[in-house]
Image (cartoon, rainbow, N blue to C red):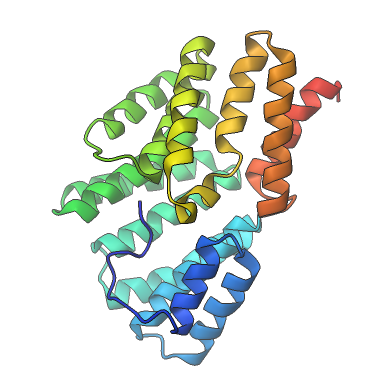
Length: 270
């Protein structure tokens, strides 16, 4: 989903727009600082505050501080409820993003439940934003199902969520990665590798502001497939590339950096 694009147009020089640009360029600590400054300086019913709260929560999560990010989403939810209402697509999207932090903290059953609730709520709405929110929430559920070893369910949901999506974007990318993970989980490694290659092509074709959030994700999925296929040298290169990229972009505590480190440990015999 293209973050924030459906909101009111803002000048490039506004503090919240600068914070958004910093986030999209991968400068997460600066984005957090800028967004937090907006939150401190404006009334809680200000529209810019809702966007700033979102940017701050996303930026904190991108730095691997997942428990703090969850707390930031919990702070933002009442504000969104007052400004937009509980059933508005922006409130539902915030809940979907919050569920991703539950997954990053290993609270997969809670992520599954919250994601499914958002999908049901979005299904009661209309318009393209609601359809995108439903697909984004489905992605969180796919991740949670895979993490719980329920790979057949994850595959079915990923394919269902992919089917109505149109032009390639980040949402299609993450769902294809979830599908590849489900195929790896079912020992269908050749299929997973092909799905990963398709996701790689998608990732390379995205605009820069959408690529950074999925740094290392394609390499991790493909490294797992290659390892299980006995192509150890190729797998290790992919895993090392993922780890170095995630460490540089997100820091050592991000769940994807940790996953890459764990995969490398399999090569090193740790």
